[in-house]
Each structure stands twice: as C-alpha cells, then as structure tokens.
Length: 522
Image 1 (cartoon, helix red, strand yellow):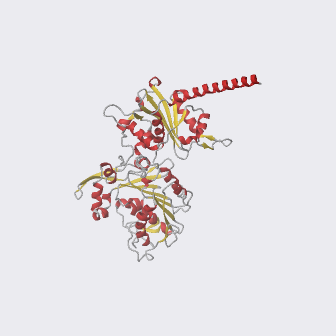
Image 2 (cartoon, helix red, strand yellow):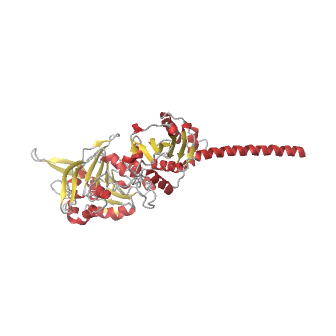
C-alpha cells in the first residue's frame, strides 16, 4: 500500500493526534512506486535528479506497516493504522559513504521532514528519535573498519544512498544486520544509485540485468532540446536465496519539481561528456565514465572461446594469482605465443577458499586442459603470499609454502609496483591501427571481461585504480604482465641454481683440501 496523502484525515487513523501536521510529502509517480513496494530489496534511480534522496528519507520513517479498509462494497477506502515510526522498537539506519556526505548533504534534507514528524536529533546516538521512541540512525562507511562497527547490529530497515560508491561485500555485510521478530515490522533494504562508480558492475549484475527497465515513449523536451525515452520498472524477481528484488528507474524528467524549478541543473546534465550524459541524464547502465582502462573493448579484446586452441609448440602457459579468502581469490590461465601475444583462456574467481583449497582448485583446472605442472612455465603470485599464515596449526607456513605442498610448482612472487604495473597493463591493452592487441580474453573468462573495464581511477592517485572495486583479476594479471616484461626469469633462476650447485662443490672441495693440509701439518 502506498503512503497516499500523508497525514490527511481521510486515510490516517490517528488524524486527531496529527491534526496540526500538514502534508509532509507528496510523491510523484516513480517515488510512489518506491514507497509502496513490499519487495525485500529495492534499488531506485539510474540517473541524477530523480528524487531518490527524498524518497529514501520518507520511506525509512513512513513505510506503511498496518492498514484496513472502511466503507461499503462500492466505496472502500484504505485507512492507515501504523507507520514504521509508530512502533517504539523500530530502528532504521541509513548510510552514505563519507562523513561529509551524510552530515552535509543527507542530514539537512532528513531534518526538514523528520522535524515535522516530531523527531529530535540526538548527536550522541547519531539518530533522529521520534515521539514513540522509534529511531532512524545516520551513519557513514569510509573503510572496512567502519563496516565492521555495524556487523551484528539489529535494524528493521537498511537504507544506502549512492549505492554505486559501495563495494558489494560491504553491502552484503551490512545487510546481515537487518532482521525482525515483529511480524508487523518486515525488514526492508532500500538503495538509491546512479550508474558509474566502484559498484557499477555488481549493481548492474544484481538489479539491472535481471530487471531491465521497460522502454516507454520517446519524448522531446523543447525547453532543453533533449530527446529521451521514458523508462518503466519491470516486475520484481526472486534471487537464489528466495529474496524478492526490483529495480525502479528514475530520470530527472520524472521529478517535475526539479525540472520546473531548476532548469540550469538539467542543462548541466545535458552538457556533460557523452558517457556521463548517457549515465546521469538518460540512465544508461551500458556505458560507464571515468574508467581506468579506457582502451578495453569487447570487440577487440574478447574472442570466442570456441576459437581458441592451446598449442604448447607455439607458446607457453602461465598462471597468475591474486590471493584472498574473505575477498575473492583470482587465478588467470594465460597462453603466451612465440610473438608475445597473451590470451587469458580460463579463470578461477571464488571466495572463502583456504590456501590448500585454492591450490587444489588451480591444479584441477590445469589438469582439465590436459596440462601437467611442467607444462606451466611459471605461476606468478601476489607477493603478499610470502607472508606466513596459520592454516596449519603445528607450524608456520606461507601461502606459497602451502601451494607447493599441494603440488604446484614454478611459483614466482610478483612485482607489486602498482603504478608501473598498471602502465604495463595499459601497454598490453593498446589497440594498434592494424592487427590485434597484445592481450585478449576468451569469452568464458566472464569475471575478467566484466570487472576489468569497470575499474575506476583512485581519487588519491589517478595513476592507480580505486581498490574498492573488483580489482582481483586485474591485480593477478598485473603481476603476470610485469613478469612477462622479463620472460627469461625462470631460465635465470635455473642458471642461478646451477651456479650455486657449482659453488657448493667448490666449497666442499676446498674443505677437503684444508683437511688434508691440516692432517699433513699434524
């Protein structure tokens, strides 16, 4: 049920108690869809200026929880009995990415509405407290440590503004704190977002692809000389865990108050570069601006897996690994031909595997291709894997030690010079005027094809990627491509081993000679 005309005596049971209140919020149609939705997880937005923030502020406090119908069969009128904030135990929490975002941008808007509902801001609790005792907390998550503060909490409602600024794992962890023992207080998760940012790929995968907006009429707005297509929401869907989800698209043109009162903002959106205009004005999720690897093109860098042939007479096989347990562990399988062209022909991308399980998984995929360990020229790994771990309780092992004990060979720690590594990656991705780029991916390498072009620049260092994104396969490849700049490392290592063996023989011969001299002198 929608919120209708808030605090209008026609549909609010406690009208006498709220007689002095005026209509707090009058939603436009897309906001009404957001406010009335009963799905477990709802993502709202897709372009800037669509009225997302106001809708989230209202929904967190005034989700209709209980209602009944009055009247006869010919004139039934829905009457609201309770909103969320009518329950003393109700707790909602709304996140933005930084302190400034929540306290300078979100809080002033929330205060305008919540004060009219009788709420008081309590700085110590970081919450608006309503007359019933219900609370709406405001918080920010700027790093992993901030996320951990809220794991294990107990909230009936989770709201996240600008979801595209959050890594997927953070949202998953925060969502674990949403629960309820009161059947009238169903737990909800509500998100607002735009295309782009570190969350672009996972949001598109989770919400937009399974719930593609339905194109509506084509409209030409003469005021701005803009032609756009209306976007309508698709039906809710259910994920593998039985949660119901939906994406509601909203454009700036769906927000008549903004369009009519601030024409300069619409003109600003229309003046942006092509990628940003597509995303922020037209709500297009198939483009992304500000990406780190602007060279990446599916046309040039992706080949059909059926066209790939593994031929050890014409090149070498390498593996590259970025380590992770809580974060994804990534392994790329590379074929480098005799001219130096690289093809990633398989991949592993999994979370929660111990080092020994990772090693066995790598060995399994290697065997799937009919390869032995000696067929793999080198396995270039995350240099952090040299650090000792605690998988085996009786003795300290590094992750590299555990890999070796589980049958992997020819392991080389990679170079972790990030800036130089990304510069090398750019060189491999370059598309020549004629011919093909020096690195390509077979179509079965879904995670590489999805995550590499989605990486965005770090705000602190434009020569580096934003590490909040899904950079795991990119990191693994970075180690490998820097190694391939020095393709004879394994031969050098083997020569060094032979040199050490010769040196050891000389040492033993010298000791024997010294012993003879000592015996003769005695």
